Every structure is written in C-alpha cells, then in structure tokens.
Amino acid sequence: MSTVQVPICAPEESGSSLLEAWFELWLEASSATLGEFARALTRGPRTPLELARWLELVAVRDKPAWSTPHRVVWEGPLARLRDFSSPQPADVVSTLVLPPQAGHDSCIVDYSTDQSQMRTILEAGLERAFALDWVGATASTAHATIEDYIAVVDRAVAHAGGRVNLVGDCQGGWLATVYAALYPERVNTLTIAGAPIDFHAGQAVIHEVLDDLTPGGSLTFYKALVASGGGVLKGEHMLRGFILINPLDEYSRQLELLRNIDDAEHVARYREFEDWFKHTQDIPGAFYLWIVEHLFRDNALISGTLEVGGRAVDLAAIDMPLALLAGASDHITPPAQVFALAEAASTQPQAVRYELASGGHLGLFMGHEALAEKWPSLLSAVAAHSQP
Image (tube, rainbow, N blue to C red; front, side):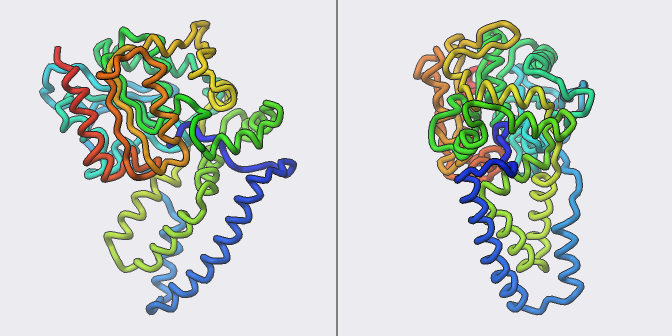
C-alpha cells in the first residue's frame, strides 16, 4: 500500500524506544478493547450462533478479486498485465497503472464496482487502460532486482503502444518515477498517488522505525528478516507492520463487526476489505533490501545518487505533465514526500497538478472521496494531454 513498507516487527535485541512505545500502545489498546468487547456483548443478545459467525468472519479469508471486466494479456514471473480497455476504445494515449508491490494484492486499484481506479480512468475518457498485477515472490524470484522490475514496466509500456500515461500508487509511484526518469520519451504524463519521492520529508512513521532498526546504517535486521523467509520478505511481516502502526484501527474493525453482525451490508463491506488487507503475498528479498538501502535509508532518489542498471536516475529528466495526489492525514507517506517530485522534475509549473485528499494512505487508492473528487480532476488533465 504503501511504499514497500519497512516492517515494524522488532527482534529481541532491538530495544528501540519507539517500538517499546508502540508495544505499550498495543497493550493499552488491548485492555481498552477487552472492555469494549464485553460491552458489545451486553448491548444486545449474542447467541452462540452469532458469536460463531463473528469468529468465522474474523478468521476466514478469501482471495480478493478484480471487479471490472478485463483480460490478462500476458504473464511473467514477476507480474501479469491486465487490459481494461473499452471494446472499441477512442484513439487516445494508453494509460498504464502500477499498483503497490507492498505485500498485498494489486487489485486495490480495482477494489470494487464503486471503488475502482480503473473504472475512474475509463470514465475520464482514457479508454485504453492497463494495469500491472504483481505476482507474489517465490524461491525462483527471490533474487529479482530493481532492473527486473523496470524491465517488467518496459514490457508493459511496449505492449500498450510504446508511450503511455503512467500512473503509480505508493511503491508503484516511485517505480513509475524511476522509469520516467530513465525513459522520459516513453511517458506522456506521470501521475503518482501516495508515493514517496523524498523519503525523508515530513514526519513519516516508517522513517522513524528505520532509524531505530538500522543503527549506524546497518542492514543486519532487514537481512535477517529476509533470510528468515528463505530469501523473500514474507507478506505477513508487512501486514503486522501495517497493523502495529495503528492497532486501534484493527480492534475497531473487529468490534464494529461484532456490533453489526446482523447487518448484511456491514458484513459484506468488512469481508471485502479484510479479504484484500489480510491476503498477503511475498516480496523478492533482493528487491526489498535494495529499496530499504537506497530509498528508505539513503534517500538516493531525491538526492540524485540513485543508479539503476548502471544509469543515473536523474529526476530532472522528467519534463512531462505531472499529477500529484497526497493524503492530508497519510502517516505512511506524508504529502511533502509526494509533492517533492514537482521541485525535482523539469516540468513547467503550469503543467503540474496537485490534489490533497482529507484521508489517509489506502483511501488515496480506493476511498470514495479520492475517487469521486480528486482522481477525476487529475485524470481530466491527463486526458487533455492524451489526444493523438
């Protein structure tokens, strides 16, 4: 969702004051929630059948699904390409979406029939639309590199016509930015949402954790984490990290489910989100460690010291129209991290569009406010630059 999130699961030797504070918050939340749980049980009759139903809903997850008709046009070890284009699309530049590769399924960009970036893109007149769908890592892809991911993006761009409107969410946003800097002639417009470009800007929780877990810049903790997964970063580590950032959110969802166990619409919304949120996938260890070292720790993308495939990643090479979306209460990727791209790129100020949603991180990709009020404005500007 985030960027490829730095997991917040400390080893015994960490002793981090920040992590200790979070653990205390977790204990406090647990205590408070037990009281809320008891009160929820007494607010109305809770039969054994209802409690069994609640426990089943909390424990059992289904694989999340894409919601908009489309076809898979190719599949490789790291990703598959999904084509959402209209049956007889208008003659416009193709749009390619890069979802986050952050331990969750890529279908967040097509979350539901009424919460879908892909549908919003099509409704904006961008009728040639594609999305990459990242495949979970296996032992055979554990050593995949940033160069491999750039090659996947390039293959998708070639399939979509050789020049695209590139849209990247979170981790997909910085990947799109790196690609645009390396191949600006292949990117018609660049749109990023909740994507860190200056990884050290703002008050990001992840950066605080990284400082605690990389004493003296050492990557020992993260290397051990990858080694414990057999060469991959396990998706469940990412999930724990997201939950521990704000454990009250997790407890609140479960309590609200208990209170509304007889409300079919509430149960359906709960299952839809939990199926996406709790269905994790693994990330190649080599790719993940590269991200932690060069982006999170060294902030090399904004400093101009990043290299990919022996080539410098120069953000000044980006001169195409930009659309930037951030969340005012995004504690994973603060707005300053996203909007930093405008200052680093060579795009003229009048060709940069900014939008600030009121919510947090995930809401930028699938929230009603962002999809109804923010994305249409950004995409209309993209469409205006997409005529042949």
